[in-house]
Image (cartoon, rainbow, N blue to C red):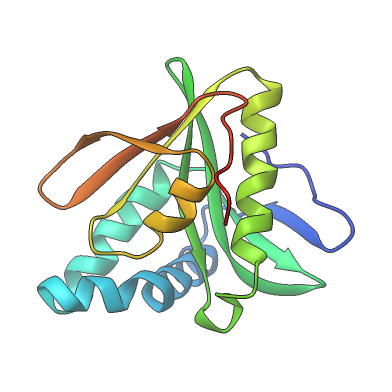
Length: 160
């Protein structure tokens, strides 16, 4: 699913299935998610790269541009009765500045416009879960390592 631009400063450019695009997406993921992976399992470069390459081939990952600068990645995919929000990673220099909130709200508006729930998953020990809860997501399932969350169309945001 293509993500429309978010004026005045965000654009979302679908990454091609090229080695350079895959490397960019991997570097963003390593920067954003790496500390949370290392905290539990350490970092196995070969495993992480192979896992990333497999996932990258199966997802429509977009480069997030803010005022002409690459700040991260995101993927939206339609699934059976919902939209999946995935590969949402921001370089650490762009975290904690409200960019993630703006991008998440934009993607939620897309899901709302389609009348579809949005689902995602995140590592249980990753503090990003608080962002999702603030925007109306609730846990609908879990695995040993992940919470699976969903927000219904038009779901309310909680006070920040």
